[in-house]
Image 1 (cartoon, rainbow, N blue to C red):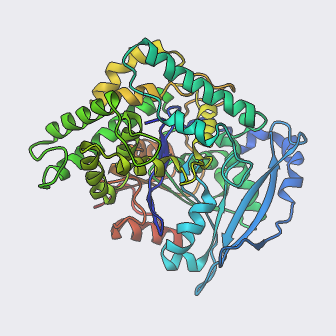
Image 2 (image 1 turned 90 degrees about the vertical axis):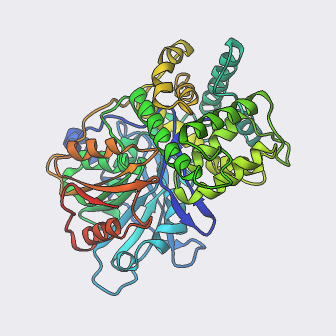
Image 3 (image 1 turned 180 degrees about the horizontal axis):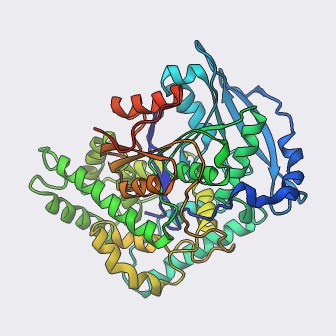
Length: 509
């Protein structure tokens, strides 16, 4: 495992992709719109007054454009940033409601990729009939002036560094890997690094709302996208339309609390996987108990740490990549059979199955190149919250709490949370309550055994928001909308189409 990030799980023709949250998980203070002042509002008029020039973007049914936003909202006359936007117009029948902006999370996930690969073709037909489906790649992400940090070969080396160090030499090597990553980001993307915060992206979303001609923002954000949506609501409560926050984050938590909670979340998800696995005759972790399954997995990780196994290519499967592969499969119970097969192969000395899961998590292409997801993920997270840890000594003190939260993953998750400790840009955000006083009803969705965004976060965010409505899915996996629960889907569809939110506290299974 290398870093952790937050991303929604969605099925496409390419399979199921699930991504996690960085060791410096997103937070950040969000000043309300009124705090920007009339002078700043005047300076932003050119951005709110620009005209979008839509064009065909080579994907049937979709249009694309580019909008401009200030690189630095504190100095709107200090230069622009170009942001990529895509849409698929409402298909009808029925009266068009407006635009529905979607974001799958990350931070660092391509919203345009999500739109074109799933949302605008896979969301329920009645929703697509009455909304223009729209996405903007956040600043620093994918098509919007992407952050770049390492070459493909450098990323290969980075993802294989041991994240459960056993001695001072391995601690030093891991710490140096984090410094090398941060230095690479500063060298290749230093201009944009101070300006990729969630607050700035939320302000970009308001410019887009105006350019689309919508008085209110209708939005569906998943995973980290819930933090982005909640930030928008706190900044612009009067402009909130129909907001769905699925797989919610808790903006009131510090980075260390987020990482520790998430560690426990993945332990819960593993326990569910293990309970299912031991019922199968071919379970590679044994067929007796979840405790024995955990012991077997820890032994496999230890064996791979001592002696990596071949994968059929130049990279071997060691503990770090194997752990990443297991973590990736925790997002969706549909991936459990694949994980069982991959674990069985690894025990036989064949690592290609777990490597494939890890590569999908890192968005590594067959040619050895990487998408910018991991780079943008760190850039946003390390700007949004002060680091969980700044020194190896801090990690070592916290290890007992992390290992208590997860005997299987705790050590690796604790060390991964050191990744923002060497970041070249000081964090601008702080943990804070997000109330969005005066906003229209906001639907917050939580899954009881969600690994990446623990259910307690959804409960907390719904309580913080002045108009929050909690919708609970009692089940496994990361996020709930469009993942098989008619109860969840009906509640959200009714809200999006009719404006009627579910009763606060509604439960689905």
